[in-house]
Every structure is written in C-alpha cells, then in structure tokens.
Length: 235
Image (tube, rainbow, N blue to C red; front, side, top):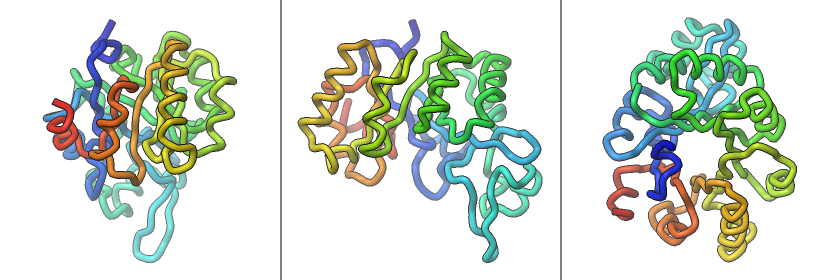
C-alpha cells in the first residue's frame, strides 16, 4: 500500500501549477513544495521521444506545429517555451520520490511510457489515466497491475464508465456540476467509490477553492490548479 491508497486526501499539482509555466520542471518543483505529487500530460514526438505537453500542437511565428510532427530538437527550437519542455524520463529522474498521474494523450505514447516507468521504477508511484476509452482499455490490458484511471471530460464520457474494466480511479471534473448538477456528481462519486474506485477530482474552469471543499467527503485525491492555496483550505 502506498500513500496514494491511504485514507488521507492526496493532492496532485495539475500540470504542476496550471498557468504560464505548466508542465515544466519549475512548475513541478514548485508544486511539490505543497503537493504529494504531480499530474502531467504525455505526448510523443516524431523521433519517438515522450515529452510533457498538454495540447497536440502550438502556434509559433504564425505557424501551427504538431508535437508528433517534430523531433525533440525541433520542438525545443520552435516552441515558445521549448527549452522548458521536459521529456518524461527527465521528469521521473528529477523527482524520484514523487507520485505521478500521467495523462496519456495519444495511443502512440502508451507502450513507451509503461516501459519508461518500469525502467525507472516509478510504476508503483504512477496512475496512468486518459480521457480516451480505447487508451484506458489498452493500458489495463497491457499492464493489469498498474493503476489505470479514466477521465470524464463531458457528458458523453459517462456512458463509457461501466464498459471499462480494471480501473483504479475515476477522474471527475468539478465542471460536471454545470451539466449534471451537484447532487448528481456526488451520487456518481458515491456509487463508484462503493465499487472500489478511487475518485480523483480535477478542474477545468470552475472556482476550485470554492468547490473542492464541498466535494472533500467524497474524493480520494484532488488534481489541483494551485496546490499551495488548496492545501491551506484543506489543512
């Protein structure tokens, strides 16, 4: 049993600290002053390297580039924050004692991510999650002993939950209150918690500090946009 499985509410920094330097080593380092771990996004470059980046691409000098269309060197050169974008192995090595939630954004990153986590001995400290049902199914199939999570990103996600096997956690957005209501969100959390799933709360564009405490009795972890302020509210 790890601290991820304890009764205490676990706090993870959402992309480290969500904002201008999100998904960078400085953001993760800052988050870990207050959080138990960090959440980050995984994509793969044209030369097969795993990098930490949320969107599928970016604008630079009037041009749009996709992450999987560039090599790591090209990404470093063309991206406005190129020098700050870490590879996943660099993140795992830099924060050896931390806990992680790796959000897998594309199927092509999955196999290499699992191998990297195994090689660097972070499998036991990582939740592998995705909003894409096919990726979630593949993660559970390829690594039955891994902690695999499914992220709800809209109403359409709800119908997939009962069809996914081998889940460890369900990642519920605070924003769900805007499309199914607070009571329905609480009911969903209670239902799947009773079935043995861990409930991870995350935020897209709601007021996290107002809403997260209301869900505290029903969640096991919060993926926080601002871990320093959330920890003050919680503890």
